[in-house]
Image 1 (tube, helix red, strand yellow):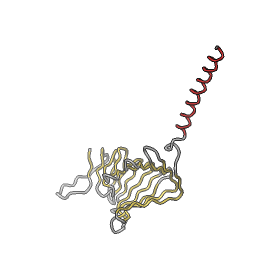
Image 2 (cartoon, one colour):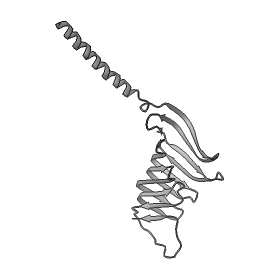
Image 3 (cartoon, helix red, strand yellow):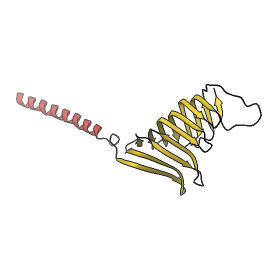
Image 4 (spheres, one colour):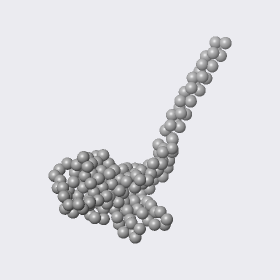
Length: 189
């Protein structure tokens, strides 16, 4: 009887330890831990009704599946956005990007530069592009260079073409326009 108790105890211990190991293996091999697809020198074309809206190029990308699928471009992106006549509206570059499929949001980081068709240039270290609302925004330091001015602030909200923008928490010297003409862009405290 004593041997049976010892054998039962050992069998129980083996089953418990196997269960933990299987759980660990499952956790390690989950589909969102490893990329399901990788690529070099890729080009992603976004279109609607057969009209190209943007082309995103990256030297390397990894796509992850799972409950929250995403595409990571750890070596950055070079993105071009077009109008309906295929003229360049906006150009964006960064040294890192991640696109969350379920949220329709792309986050770009590290040396982010956005240039619109008016030649206005945004420099920042972090920017979020919300495809649903067609907005780009950030809460970190921004520098906007126009053909005749430079603006600094801590945050930005703009349309995704970067034609109409609002700079948040501005700093620097600002000249106030006293005539009644309205500007597309705003500086807010």
